[in-house]
Image 1: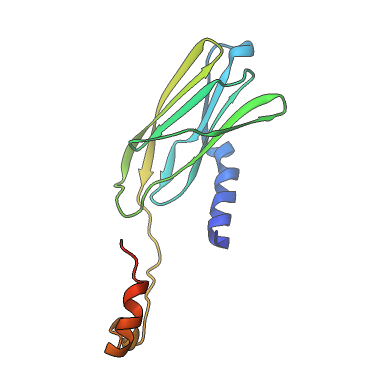
Image 2: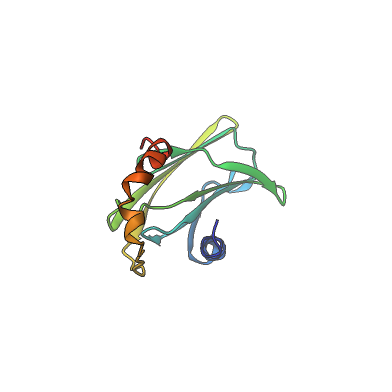
Length: 152
């Protein structure tokens, strides 16, 4: 992971508390807290956090037609599930995307459906300049290169 990616993840972790939208259902021991950003930039990672006093039996996070099972740990006597999600900068369009969380604790299922706004972003252009022999290798080198090709 590059330093830039680490910084983005760190900033995301810090911002989720400040920018997150949190909700609880019935109070007391059964309370489940959901934290997620209201919006995120295209191509940017973000965190979704589910916290409960009761242990989770199972958790499912559905985002952009894919299902994820987040890791769960215990912190300060609370059960915390965290999922890092994101968008594909090449295929995702700006707009609202549905986030669906299903959690089972004891005999109770909790379902949360929220919308996250995906906003467009700008990224610096990067150019790669290669010597022409690397783009179109000499015929002598083609025989050596042929077995190294990956079948994409």
